[in-house]
Image (cartoon, rainbow over all chains, first blue to last red; front, top):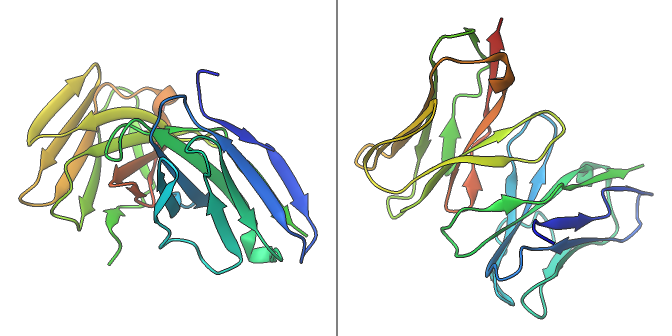
Length: 113
Length: 105
């Protein structure tokens, strides 16, 4: 596709359940970012990949959060043992280079009940 | 101190006025600066990028960068109600909290 694609668009998880969120970046984009956005806040940085290498994971809030991009294209953000405070919109963005213009997917709205 | 700081607003201007949005950043090594617009319930969309000191104009939008002061701003001329949105400043993959702009008819 022409843009960044994220799935699912919506996810409801019971507290304690594991979830996996997928991001399919723009073809050829080397850089991939994950963000968490709470209502009324700006996107909070979670992690950054350059190809398959996870170069920065300083924003991951706990060891329950894990991200991978094994072949340098599609990325998955996994949250284990979800908690209510994990409820947010998770955004993925990709860019041609690290300091280049980043384009966002539609986001995944996660609700933990 | 956060890496990217914005006045959270909200900012309200009448239709036709100039809206001025400001952003400061902490990393002196930053080379690329971006403004995004985010409508409620939607993802951020890129509206301006700026890489060197000075002004960059694109239609009704002007981005201004001052690396010595670590300051970047966005001016929206002839503001329209359709410009009502949250404006996000981004530096090195980090975003500010956003400034919510309302343009009143």
